[in-house]
Length: 401
View (spheres, rainbow, N blue to C red):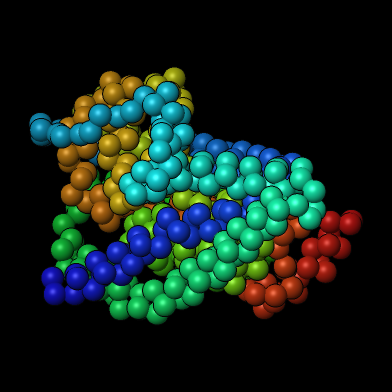
């Protein structure tokens, strides 16, 4: 389609800034955190990410058991070409880069995050141990000052990319509808509806009501208004890592979250917090069982939950990366791999919903962790226009009671 190159250029621009913005923002986050605080905030973020992912998988399995997507459809034998799924041990070792420069060149996000955090934490520890006026401390302060300037430059570049993004997003959406049309029917429609309902429940119940309204005590409507640019971008380009610059911009300017929290949680969430992807893995397993005429026991579904949880941690935040990860989930419970080839045609559409769910989860967890660590200003940004019942004074009064 003639508009496709415009959309492709927009995606390329976003990909261009992923690695530098991760490095600059993570290093800036470590500057403001002592090793003790980094451990506390990091622990809260990781635990919440794992918890929301587990709930998402359970949500997907529950909705799938009610709707039974794929029922009435006969499996067609199809040759499937899938990549070799790395073992859990390999995934853990791949987090530690053999060569950090190679990891940056290849866009290995987990390895980049690991090395950047280790390097930044190392500078923070050395800075705390040396004399205040020593050359080493001055050198580290200089590095942090350069990083601070680099981060400001990257945010200015993000602003420019998003100005062009008005055309880019339109081109991407036009190309999508021009290619896909209304071909998804029957069993494919039931698969799509199952995912959409599960995502709707996950976002509404878990993110908006439990986390934002319950744990943070703020307006879910204001929260959605604050993250709408990130959600629209995720829906358009179906990549968590490519959406990262927009997520950070929303967290900083709209949600008024301090960089010491979102600079750590959002890059990490773009890599390991794949709620939508993990949910989809469980739904596809039920779909595969139905079209194969099989029935999954409770134990097998619990096995799917655990496998999907572990596999989602190693899923790259790029379009349709979950197709390879499905191999492990389906093999674990003895389901046919041919289903991967069957759903690959409609996966680009479903991947957009999954990515939007991933981003919503990242932003919700980041918001509650910021609240727990006094790293959010609830009197400005989108919160300033929230109803009186959600004002910071009202929330404080409620907590005091």
